[in-house]
Image (cartoon, rainbow, N blue to C red):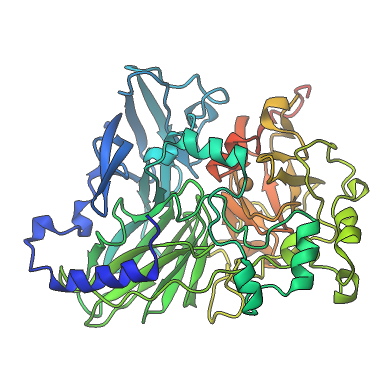
Length: 559
Ligand SMILES: [Cu+2]
């Protein structure tokens, strides 16, 4: 299952020997079914999925993984009938990033009761936006089994992005292990799937951390190779449901402007995306247009979307999405003709977490240069975060977290031309440019050893009350990451403006990745009354407690 350098090279070699295949047998983009119209029907059911020749259990929608592309039009009414054909469990569909009435948002227990086995629920809502989005289950761990799909809304007016052709690229992670088994193993041992730990041999060979650093990290019971909880040891990384050897291929005519709508529908995987030999013009983030910015690579967190435009010449190109811990990759090909391949680069060297990732970004090196025991104490100083409850879900408090929106993401420091959040500028003026009337700080806390994750030290099942907002109020929210993992934090039913110094053209997002030991600030206009889910989009983090309910009450109603 691990897609190592050797198997990829072997696959590339084998692919070159495969004879020409008829068009219908090629995994080209036309293979992604699309559903349109005033009444759309989706059916959730078990099926088998074959990836790179290996078959395992999965959940599909209308028989495919990912589910079909749901294509809507801005300014129309959507009516989508969702049937749950799973024999013995409830299901649901959440429309990720859509602005709609809260009871159509599809989160069981928050917005509606869920869809019982055999039942059909009809979602009806006005389509008020355009862009690239996706949908997925919000029930149990079904999303990990394939219950997700792309959603594209065509604008009512002219599209500011000029392009000749488009491809939807759904990135995901699939495992033959049942998600409950994965979760159980994480609970038993947070680092269960990390097969890239530092070794004695590596130390002797002078690789990775020197002995002094290793002892300091060891005393803190922290592991710098701990980048992803679930890795290529458990996952095959997919493009549109196909493995690296299957090699999904998107066709183009040389010289065309090709728009790629890239969606990270993974349960747990942050990807670093690049196309060898091509510059990418980022034109949209999380469904909303941004001023075009040219990059060579970008990190896409779970649940984010980026649209890029590329102009390929007459040749084949490898689209590579490495998992951020470099334990594997998703791979696809862009080519003028089916059957063409391009070289696939080996996985790059795995990154190590840094002192910044431990929330020491604001400290000078002198302050870091003390022994492990002292550091261990300074890593859990509860007085630094008075609002955080002192519970076992808090393994550490970042001593000096810094704004990391200018960082490219773990492992990408020093790589040329990598997108950061600070490169994003909204194409349209922000709809609300008022100064926030209050501030709110939320800490992302966790305990890797016990695999507990929470907001402010309180897991979802121990939360006493939702986070209250008054309808129409504008609030500045700062998320502080007290853990060594990245957390893609998603708020339902709203967009928020990242505070990165872009004035009234701040980039607006529905999901923001908070880097380890870092912080992110955004301004939120709470303009959608109702109860909304607010959670880490890493599936097992959400499942382990990093979730809350945000309630937006009409002004004048008692809190
Ligand atoms: Cu998380």
